[in-house]
Length: 318
Image (cartoon, rainbow, N blue to C red):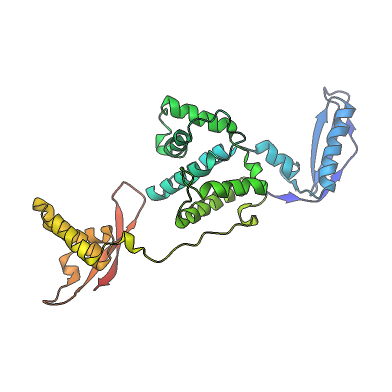
């Protein structure tokens, strides 16, 4: 979309042979535009609107000749529909995990970005409907269950317009929504930052679509949460616990030794499950005593059927 501030107005043209004889005429960057009206009063009113926009230093669209604010209002969609448009435009080729994070982030904020919560269905039902159906293209070919269809219809009716995000208070409402879990408690810092990154992309798409003049997210003062990088010992096995776990796994029948090797590589070598799956004996250096090393094949997820991966070499040792 291109725009210009070079706007000029001409006198009305009157064509008595037309049903709407009074024509308002103006140019944008030298390109001529016009609108016809039944009465001179209507034409004068329309011209006054356009002149006011020009005097307010508002840019005009060079394709339609309209002020950008007027064009945005005509093309405006609500946040719920914009979220669906965003997912649909990026779905093909996106990894399954990425699609899940989109749905999670959009579902977290969409049922909060509403004009009113009067008559709102149970929020857990709304959240599940948004996550499982509204932002999951795989389910769009099917009709959702009646209670979920009702919840989605409510959200679609009450969702705010995307243009409402130009107001800082609405942006702060969005940030507050992605910062808490469904039970109202504070979400983990890493989750908050991930959802904010996704919202930044969603709002950037709104700018590309002409729904917003600029991405409002960076314009609002917001203190990002501090991500705790230290590993919490409460969530990591001690060597004694790991040994006990592997001993218990070893007793699980015929598959025991294989699972011991699998989990042992994860714990002692710090390997990811996909790396262990690709591990082969000829990629290992196994001395008679002490620690050895391995050249495992690290999985890199690729778009396609579940389980399909590509691999690249990486060295592990201990």
